[in-house]
Length: 391
Image (cartoon, rainbow, N blue to C red; front, side, top):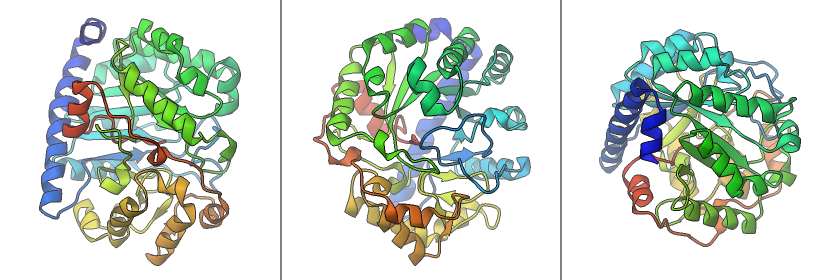
């Protein structure tokens, strides 16, 4: 795998990935762990939605149906990144909507060349020109969403010819020598594809460096509860990933299990939090309540004094090692109301929706399947590798 990545990745992109992500990312995770031991808190990294704008309309997307779309002002985004760097953290996940619709995006990448960015994109705008610009900045790994075959993809994503356009994006990214990944929100309609050896082999042939699986979570204007996986399907996915890690020439990443196969919640661990396009700090992208907003006070002070985030981190592990928004959505509303947290969904009805939402299985209810590979065990224990995805 390393040989394939080295041979097919632009050398400057490879260096930025190895140093900005590998070395500095690991150091930031170690700083995060030391802060926790001292009773202090600041996330190891942030996921930031730079815009609510998108050119697709996906099932289970948290930004659809908003009364008003927001975009972070460039100065606001710059301040968030700078204050995070001051705490020794240099890795950021850039989300949307579709972040490639955010016009100042490449200015941000260029200005913060000492950071590493993971760009969550649907791929439809990742043209050869965009791929070349990403190669020039060198500090970005595009993570391209792949949501199903020819029939499923258009339904899942609310677009046309999405399957073909996704493959074109992958080819554009890897053809430019980018360290590129593919992500799949695994649900009932694409589970068969997710577990397909042919699918993984096809990505390897295109020189994709890593495949990131995360579990579909029913949220947003169109939550599509019927797509949520059963306990048995989640267990099947977990076992497949553990086996695939020692079988395929590709990094297989997940966000929900530790090295021993126990469920985890990145938000409950405090490892990462989400800043939405209006500047609100949410526990994660799918928990759309916030009691704190960036720009009103320094980030360090915000995290030090946030009773909402503190109690959430204390209480979620007592309830579940899985996803609380799936297993007990009404409890999330109760906690938000207790702390006066605002509905940040942009739809104004998130509390009502969650109170009426039935519970669905999450990754915390299965039988633990420990990692077989020492590399993955080490990475999950000692670095932030695989522990911060959204779903």
